Image 1 (tube, rainbow, N blue to C red):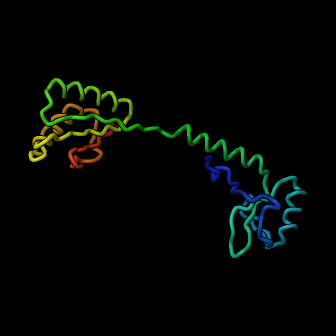
Image 2 (cartoon, one colour; image 1 turned 180 degrees about the vertical axis):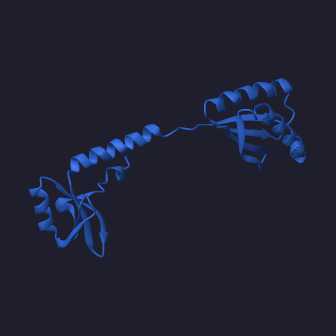
Image 3 (cartoon, one colour; image 1 turned 90 degrees about the horizontal axis):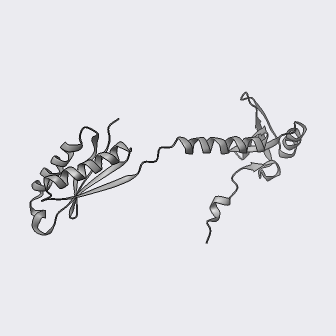
Length: 175
C-alpha cells in the first residue's frame, strides 16, 4: 500500500486559507492588516499573484502575496541543490578474530584503507569464539595492532566497546 503522507499538500493558497482574518507581510517586512481574507485575496489577484499562508498568530493567518508557481519552483530547486551537495557516507565492516595471522591482518588493513580513502566509515568487529571472551585483553591487542596499520589514514570515531561476543570500534577518514 502506498504512503499517502507524501501527497498531503502543506501550503494554503488563496481560498484554501481557513482563517477569516489575515495579515499580509510585504517583501520588506512591512505588515498590512488584519483584514478580511476575501479582501486580501482580491488584492493579490489585482497584482496578478497568489496569497500564501506562511503562519498563524492569535487565530489570524500570516500571509504573503507572491507568485505561487515560481515559489514552488524555487523550493524544488533548493531541495535538489541540497540533495546534490549532500555527502553520502557508507558504513563498511571489517571482521577480525583474536588469533588472526599477521598476513591476514595486513590484507584486511589494506582493504580498510581502501574504504577510508573512498570516504566511508569503517566498523572494525573482533569476534570472540568460545572461551576467548574471558581474555578480552588479547582482543584489544589485536584491535590496537590493526589500528596501528591504518592510523595514517584513519581516526577513531568510537572507542572499542564489547557488544555481546564482538568488540566493535568505528573509524573514519582523517580530514
